[in-house]
Length: 123
Image (cartoon, rainbow, N blue to C red):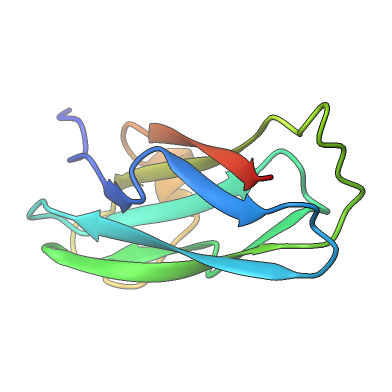
């Protein structure tokens, strides 16, 4: 079984928010599928109450891209010890012949790929 093609993200490695995080903030993340197969994607955070990703999962068409929003909710920010947060992007090839996102692609499908983006805060 072949690996799914890489997903390209913009930004490539880090997502930035402004500290001290007193109000809700939104930043954009672009996901691109440079390959020839439909991909299923999902974006998760280990800090569930802090970040919301919209849409957090879906189908990514071949040679297309999608812009998703990452919302950071207000939280007590300590500049001397900023949080070390990450967003995890997972993707997998879709089942042959399917066009709508199906969570089963991750459970019963092929190889799940991952990319980790760091979440950073401007002082």
